Image 1 (cartoon, rainbow, N blue to C red):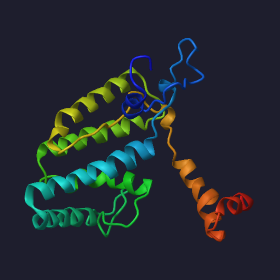
Image 2 (cartoon, helix red, strand yellow):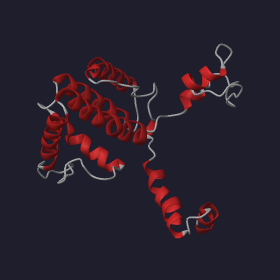
Image 3 (tube, rainbow, N blue to C red):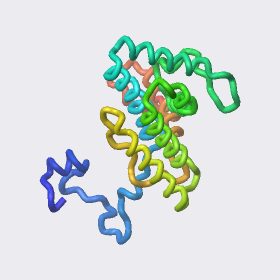
Length: 215
C-alpha cells in the first residue's frame, strides 16, 4: 500500500487504499492465510465447469471449426450418456448439455469426463485435466499433512506444465488449502430456503422487507 497507487492496488491486488484489516497489527497473523478457498465455487464449479469444460469446447472450435467441433462434442456427450451403471457413478443420459449446473452435477461429471474426452483431444490436454483432478481430490480431504501439500504442489506443477495447450489458462487456485474440506455446499442449500422461496412468496417489488418478514 505504501508502494503502489490506489488504482493499481485495486485492479492488481483487490486492495482498497487506506483500509487495513483488523489483524494487521497481530503478530504472526496474515488475514490472507486465514481465508480458505471455496472448494465448491472456486474449484469444482468455478475451475472445472466454468473454465476447463469451456476450454475444451473452445479449443475444438478454434482447431477444427464449428461444424467439426460440434461433431466431436456430440461424440463426447454420447460417451458420457452411455456410461454403464456402477456404484458411485452417476449417469447422464442427456450428456453434459443440461440447463443448470449445480455442484453435484460438476462433482459427478468430473468422475467420467477424462475417459469421455480421451482420444478426441490432444494427450497433453488430457494430462492437464488429469493433474487438475488429482489436485481437486486432494484439497477435499478432511485434513492435509506435509505429504498432501507436496502432492498438491506436484499436481499443480503438472497442470501448469501441460495447460499451455489451452488458449488461456488463468489462475487455478490460491496458495492455501481448505481445512476440513471447507465448502459452501451447506450455505448453498440454505440459500434456497432463506432467499429463493421467500422471493417467490413476495410480490417482487422492494421484496427485501417481505423476504425478511417471511424468514
